[in-house]
Image 1: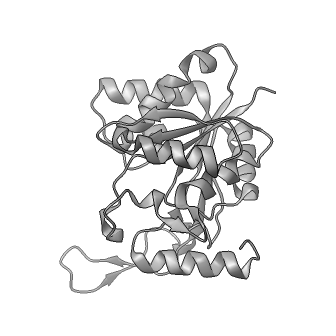
Image 2 (image 1 turned 90 degrees about the horizontal axis):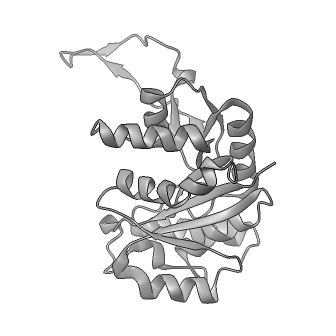
Length: 237
């Protein structure tokens, strides 16, 4: 079976965390945030290609992290002005290998989710290869529907158990994913995440697998403290 590719997105600014630098290069338990995600992907044997999407102004930080904290080959692609453009640039960098069958599946992950586990990555990869697309998610029982006039709660049109909070990595068969992103670019379509593109431009089913409570996104300063506590409790530091 051809290898899969893991794409780690690190081209955002993350201003809400309150740091002067891109938050994915902040320290977390003695390592930069982004290196935790890269390390998790590197430990999944089926991931044969690892891509880091970075900002050009972070080139020195990227070089520092890859030389000191990541024990695996990483291809660096510079992102665009939006997440969508950054994802497309990553896919285009892989396009020749996708088209000749050298890469069969692509997983796209936010570097701001540093506690992703190799087992979750492998689970998403398995489902994506089996069904065409897969995302990790957690059931959400704290969402309600309100009436249009805001006067009260409406009955759910669907069971609350069917409402989930999506996480990353989101994985898809490589050739359809590349085609979908190119079509979206031609139509100036703007999606919310990778799965939204597939739902709009592809008939491939997108399955969901059980996510992980620890796979949360670093958004605010206290999230870094929580993440370090999680790593300590797991004996990783």
